[in-house]
Amino acid sequence: MEQYCEPKTRQPLITLERVTLRVGDRMLLPGTSWEINRGENWAILGPNGSGKSALVRAVKGDVPHVRGRLVRHDPQAEGRRIGYLSFELQEEILAREEFRDEERCFSGRGHELTAGELLGADGADPAARQRLVGILGIGALLDRGFRFLSNGEIRKLLIARALLPAPKLLILDDPFAGLDAGVRPPFAAALSNLMREGTQLILVVQRPEEVIPGITHVLIIRNGRVALAGRRDDVLTPARIRRLTAPRVAVRTSPLPAIRLPLPETGDTALPPGEPLVEMRDIRVAYGRQVVLDGLNWTVRRGEHWAVVGPNGSGKSTLVSLITGDNLQVYANEVRLFGTRRGEGESIWDIRRKIGLVSPELQLRYRKPVCVREVVLSGFFDSIGLYRRPEPGQEAIADRWLEILRMTEKAERLFTHLSYGERRLALIARAMVKAPELLILDEPCQGLDRTNRERVLSLMEKIGAETATGLIYITHHAEEMIPCIDHLLKLEKKGAAVTAGEPASGPPDAAPRPGDG
Image 1 (cartoon, one colour):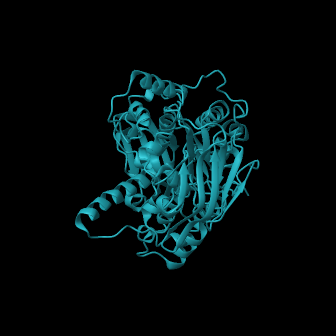
Image 2 (cartoon, one colour; image 1 turned 90 degrees about the horizontal axis):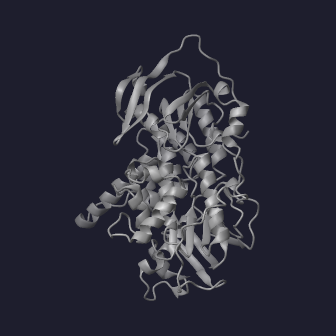
Image 3 (tube, rainbow, N blue to C red; image 1 turned 135 degrees about the horizontal axis):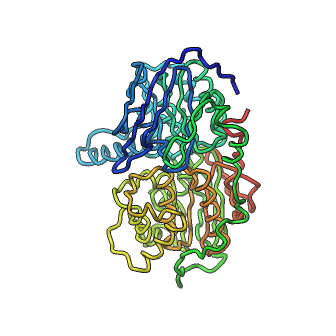
């Protein structure tokens, strides 16, 4: 790690004096004081819902402070001049594009926003643009429609968009989430280079290992308040890093042994063990000249648990969309689900009734201003929002899942007012309430802190080991591979696929962590 030299005279860039933030109807981080000086690069850590994102959004100018003062000492620290990346920004752009899509349908004018148009090039250094495109591997995406990109591809695009104007202050909220293992180290190195060249960085992360070289100061939030703030070496001591990173209980010895999962019986229509849940034959999916999947043959049988791995753009999200019915190219391919070929009379609701889904794409689409309990209950009806009155038994199951995930106290809170990680927990409960025959977990731990990651991984292991629900599990993190996984599908970047009967010790795309040397 590079040595940081404390300047003799501090030159403040942004000062927060005893501020209290407001997000919706909630007050966060009461009485918080924090000073960012020129030349300092900060990382912020803390559990889900602690206020990390709200704090950096206040620095950006997107979250109001209702008490105290926020002083910007330099015009370069004004909100519009700050480079910014967050899941909230990703949601805003997607919502805006969906609204414009409705306008285009009525007017017949306009065209789909492409990745290249979103990235933009006005006033940007062509060499810098090309360098970013190369580091992040997004050259082939620039002519594709924004809404047809996977979650990881969108993250890469928005990272490049934030970096391209070369801002003096750059705020990145969980920037490594959704990136494949091969991209994370060069991206971390690019950020460290930017800091060496004078760009100041505020980095919000869930994992201490993502506090990359060049970060000079660390702020830790606990129990809704700033617990520690100061020089990196003073805050992230070896003992504290061990406490933050070492799992308290190994996933193989589940911390949920006494919990009886609140799953209703699957019913008489369930397929017997060994029968195919998913069958795909010679699958080809392409968008213009861009081939995503080509020649894929894959069968998932009842009783099997599969991991699907591969780099961003290899077709993992496309594969999921073929199963859930969100991709119309399913009708141009031979896909059988639960013994029935798609396009032979079954409705999309017949299919979704048997599938539970957790994915970044679902989370981006679920923007209804309903309470958390209603979000969980909507899983019984596969709806975005709740439009039917649930039965008492369904309400009891939903409440039990909220209890298991320790979300009971948030049950009546608006879903849109939760942190990104808290929303992910609610969607996991939503997926499980109906006891699906097939549970698709696309990066289920994305955005979760260590405690919630352990809880979710243990829960997924318990579901795989003790229920009839089959798992399709997608992850970019080798350490998140759960023991019940017994089959592996590896997707390559150019659409080829290789299957293996048993998985390796971790995803084959595993690579050094962002902070590794």
